[in-house]
Image (cartoon, rainbow, N blue to C red):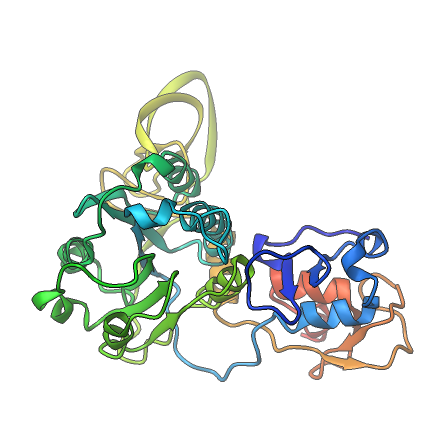
Length: 384
């Protein structure tokens, strides 16, 4: 049995190594497709149960009931200095290629779990700052913008102050529904330009810094000025993916008060004649399938997006429900001794788990699907 998983779910667990080049004998590729285990040389010293338990350990622990925001605003800051294109042993082949690929996979998972959120991408090279993509919820637009970044653009030095100044200029224009989040990927070993007073403008943000080459005291100290904040020093590509996964769940926002947010739920319409539609992904285009704003009837080609006329946020109601469930994840199931078949698929696997609320037993495959996609326990839903 094989089921689709988020991109972060396929992990490589390095045993007895902190990264670098490996010959493959000390890497455990934890894949959900069990038929691959016997065909992979790396699994010769591991049984299926051990691999499954490693996969289950990747899930976040049971979290207390705390206030989180469904609407997230994330600024991704990329260092495109010359050092990003240099060969790297722990982030092979180089830091630029590793960050770009990992970020593409993370964006898919992030917008799948946080469909009401917006992301902007800013990069710095040659001591300047460039806004690659303005705040948008469109995954195709973000992926298209990232694909335009080339390794040849890694030139000069990174101006961190310029990137933070760009962010501080956008923050006052936000709606105030959520705590602005900054995710910085920095590849240098020191900061060439001082931060100046710009750091005072990001105090009310959530700052997450990835020092790709080594720990930098100035950056770690910067994270102490904001709350919540995180400072990471990835040791390998797998380590970087695992650390990014921690940012999929919204940060705590105890300082924000609940607000009523207006949303529009447009319906998909078809026309035999092409209609001029707007979209967040680019210039207006002619299309036969479109969505109509329920407030002003302006046509848009895709959702989620923002109406160009009345600024109403247009979204699918299922995406809104998905975003709610992602900030209220179900508790981790408890592993039990295999005795009864899975309540969902009827299979009896070597690793079985049970929901402590309703007492339903599930196999490890159904456990993956419920925690990664459904965000609900079928047994608990039947009791309701």
